Length: 370
Image (cartoon, rainbow, N blue to C red):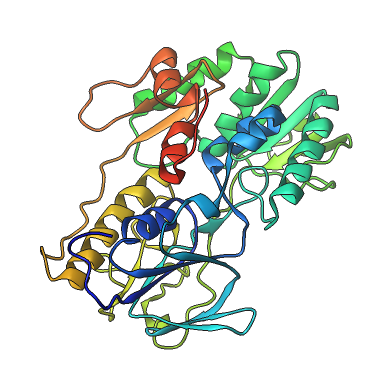
């Protein structure tokens, strides 16, 4: 226990055990009675989920049971159904009174970017089944040319050099967002070298007739008249913030897109003791790195309020930053303060090679092999 810990310790309830939530919970474990609420039995390192799809040997490496996270606090496996400024109500009916609440529920995303299974073994079964279907497919269609669509295309090509891979998007270019034009040029160059077809600027007339991730041959047509035949497809867009549990006194902070407005100190607008971070806030875009940095600010601010030491500080948003692996040896990206963009080896060294698994292993105090 820290020397600054008071005899009486307030209760901090962290709702959501993703990238930001686990860091806040761990950082406050010595000065508060921390309760981490999440329905899953393990933290999932979603950054590496696409690698686990093409190589299921990665699956055990990207799931970290919560039981190694906290020394003093507790993890409650349940879903929050109503959260107000003073309490968290769970699906089981349990109510947890809180002195401080941290909203860190993140976002949902189509499989394989994320799995909605709450049991690790069920999630593993889904990835293995989809891996088998993908392995049997000759043609693959990926809908969405953002980071997930591009990364998945690169992961598939690294394992199966002979598959036909088409990435389709209604946008006129890849990788929407405030990124350097030369980054898109470099990624498109590498995608062309990999033989990955880009079909941009025209929506499909109809969605594929099969379920995503299942093996069945189909043909779709764009509004421009281009036909694509594939044996499997995945949806690589559509992050949705998970904020449906907010009670009436917190609901005014929600925008029309169901995102949470926060102050510079990452308090929920209109609240003194409720904080929010990550994908559910208006700070966007949804990235694990952003959630991690915001978690540091939230934890420091709550610690200052509990101990009376230090001041509540503001979060300074990051400039545009991204690393897009195209398999374990290729990719590109842009980093703050650096001219130009990353080449393939640099992107692999920073992210693509081990997909930051060692960072999560450190959080959970377990080994993270390469």
